[in-house]
Image (cartoon, rainbow, N blue to C red; front, side):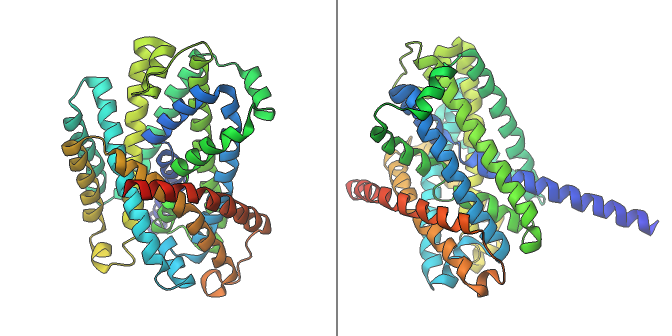
Amino acid sequence: MNNNIVLEGEKKSQSAKKGAIIGAAFLMATSAVGPGFLTQTAVFTEKFKGNFALPIAISIFITLVVQLNIWKIIGVSEMRGQDIANKILPGLGHFIAVLVSLGGLAFNIGNVGGAALGLNVLFGTNLAFGALTAGVIGSVLFISKDAGAIMDKFTKVLGVIMIAVITYMAIVTKPPVEELVVRLFNPENPKQLFFPLITLLGGTIGGYITFAGGHRLIDAGIKGEEALDDINKSSLIGVTLASIIRVLMFLAVLGVVTKGGVLDPLNPPASAFKLGAGMIGYKIFGIVIMAASLTSIVGAAYTSVSFIKTLVPVVNRNEKNFIVGFIMFSSVVMALIGKPVKLLILAGSLNGLILPLTLFTILLAVFRKDIVGSYKHPKWLIYSGMIVVLFMSIAAFSSLKNIVKIF
């Protein structure tokens, strides 16, 4: 009898572990493909057509480098990003936590707006009502005692739905695959592709997004050098999922614009889906943006609060309440003032600054035995990570200009 109980407990433990590994991957992947990503992809695909394949490919490689570096080091150290930063330089973790949380809040308001738009497309609901509804849906996930497991399942279900419907659109619009392959290796005016690449990176691996999966694994108890295989598996699944969605969205829009379709500048992704598959396509867009927005709401709130909880005891004791408050505040702001364009621009600018700073800080940790112990980080990840830091640091100067203009 006792043996049966033990075996049953081990099965549940293994099931929970597997759920957390897949859940962390989906949390990162779906956080990276919010409403901002959908809009950026549609706009840049219309402008650069097949040439945009090169920024997509480069962004996937950079995403792999960034995520593998951060997930591995966070997992081995058993510390969250802000705590590692404070070990490197006292006070740096607090500074990064403020930047990540502010950027997460600004983006979350946009995520709520995206969910409201999705509900409007699907059911014709008022945008303010849709914003509050999205807030309630996101908040309910964290009220349960099993909030972590529910969050894992929620992101998995919506992630699979997103992949399924975008795949349908990519098939229906019939993109020119042969031309795409040619432009991937021989793009026209490659210098012009620098800006869309930076924008794509800022919206898909900047700020809180980079740490979403790693922090989730720590909360699930998947940490330490002995858990490296699971950490690698989760990060690679996450990068693969995000890359699949990124490529499929590009293909879906490319099939429309190469046939002469002109996107509505007020809502480029919605018009792309409508031009590609009529009213069915328009409804599919509603599903995609609602799924992308709801998962991003969850990811932004969870990860932003995770950056504060180890620094502020009252937040740590009441984590769920603060996550719910974060979501509802975002929803109320969206319902009252509508689309906060300046906040979204500011968030993008902050992300441009945050990525090179956080990645550089995490990379420094591999040389500190008081952080990673005897762990030896792969040299190719250190070198490629430093190249990404340099590349993104150059891009940060343009972000600084945006911040000055806003204020």
